[in-house]
Length: 196
Image (cartoon, rainbow, N blue to C red; front, side, top):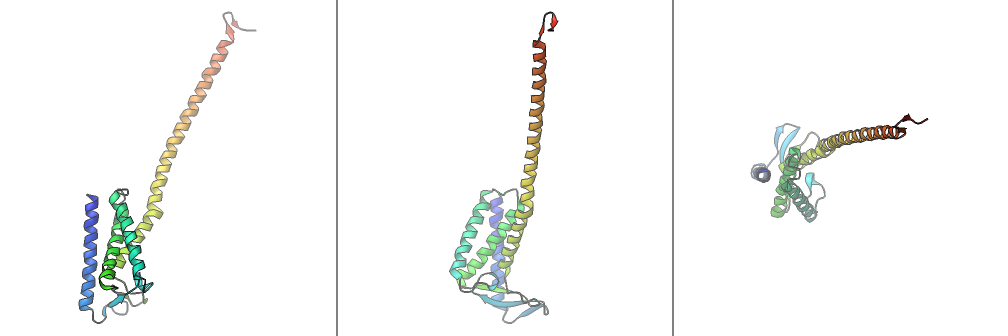
């Protein structure tokens, strides 16, 4: 069931990405300010990677994207991290963003970007880029904070079990020593009482 949800969510996110890019191409002939001087919609054809980096490396990015998508999809479909919703969410976001931009690279030879923070002159990006970045941040949060806590929690439980087992073994050994000492004392006594 989880795999079906992941596939459906991925398809939905890719659909949203492709729809927003189509709308940008159809209707953004000139910049459209959302918050004047801060954020605007601005059509840009990006031949590089996310945020316009590494222009002209189309085949390299397509290869890397395919590898990342296949690895993440295999991990998510295996159910290994089934109990960790954050991993499933982040993996789904990264896969959807990768597929969304891959479609553009294959179909158009470039990626359609249209979200622009003019105030800080941030590189123009798109919905797929948002999915990849948010997914990657969530994955980092998981592995740096949540997953380590779970592992440490398990280690602490294992440590308590080990400590209890050690204490039990020590008390059993002490009891055996007392019993052995009592037997030795009893062995030194004869019928007539303690030997002189």
